[in-house]
Amino acid sequence: MSQEVLTRETNRRQLQQIIAGLSDGVILLELDQSILWANEAALAMHGVSRIGELGANADEYAKRFSLRYRNNHMVPPENYPISRVARCEVFSDVLIEVFTVDDPERVWVHSVRSMVLTDREGQPESLVLIMSDVTDWANAELRFEKTFNANPAPAVICRLSDLRYIKVNPGFLEMTGYTRDQVIGTSAYEIDIFEQAEKRDLAIQRLRDVATIPQMQAELRLPDGSSKQVIVAGQPLLLNDEQCMLFSFVDVELRRRAEVALRQSEERFATAFRLTPVPILICTADDQQIMDVNQAFLDSLAYTSDDVLGKTVTQLDFIDDDGARNRLLTALAKSSRVDRVDLRVRKRDADLLECAVSADTVNIHDVPCYLLVLMDITERKRTELELVSAIEEVMKDASWFSRTLIEKLANVKKINSPQLPSVSFTDLTARERDVLGLICEGLADKEIAARLKLAPNTVRNHVATVYSKLDVHSRSEAIVWARERGLFSGEWRTKGQR
Image 1 (cartoon, rainbow, N blue to C red):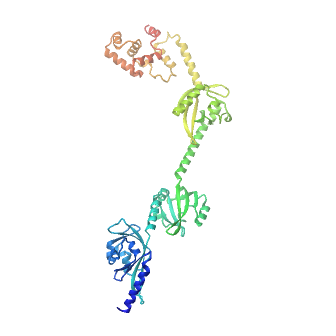
Image 2: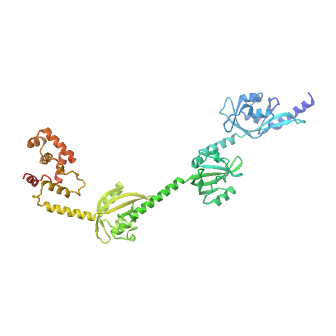
């Protein structure tokens, strides 16, 4: 063995002894790409215990292990670090995922660099791969990446060394309409999230100090030129050994629009409430304390605001009948609304008004309230009473009225009875009126047929037609309908027989 070869082998043994105990993995290769030696750390990083399990050379290594970049793209065998160093390439910090062909679920992450050792004449003598196991770091980074992307709150990460965005999650892209390429690598000066912030100077100072930036309202400029109201906060973090700032956002644009719509709605309600000529009162639902009344209420009942506001409906005592007031409030508590209940309302000077009161339950500043609308029907009531009184006076002696006119007067008298059907007795034919009269006398269909000398089927048809026109469903309902209208009394039948 020549002295040169002996010296080279001695140097290799010394090199192996030096690196055997290192925590970094080291693989030595011959110039012909054969694997000469590997330390324990390198074997452990490949899940093997003997050098032979790595393969005899770079080609066999590629058959036993698959490599993948961190972007999930597979590494072609010719670009494996072991193949590159075999071509005497020098490189550093190549980050790859390594797994055996037989067990792709077990994955290591290596950070690999290469060295080419030369002899005295500068010619390549030994090839070295040096690798660090960064699996734990990569898994932690992967967990962070997944958490960051899955976070529903919009967020971006800015690298503080050059103030460029290095990460953005889907929430931010969805909120703003930016694409990932429009954000990643972009300067914080181009997408200035504090451009319209309410505490911009504080945010900039905290950014310089690498300190937490408290929540503040800002107006974020969007790619289409519009803007959006957001709440933004910043939190320092260390990412890949670099100082960064995590910015998280809350989209308050929908809330702002809702607030504007609510304010506009309240303004419209306030305007209508103030200007409507119908008296309106608003009170709380729980204790009926009066919160507001409109000018029409004050004018109609002769009150001032000081007389009314702050008192309860009971204390103001403007509803003349305590029982009617209690029934109104009970009905409101039970069904949330009432429609056109006739009540007497007392003015401040004790005069009484006849009112039709409608009420509903509304929420004002999240407080359940009753809204009472009072329609003054005093004149209408007075007119109707006078009309009914005149009709009753005339009908005391109606012998000289025609039968049709008396029936129409009777219908006018009953005009204020909303429970009565609107059909008139005169809507029946003469034969149908005869049949109804005999029903009111208590006769059965056969008896009616004998009295009127009609066939029983004909009588049944007439009875069905009468039920349909009167909107009743039985003889008893037909009799009640006729009696409520004062039809077929003894006096009427006598007059009808004249």
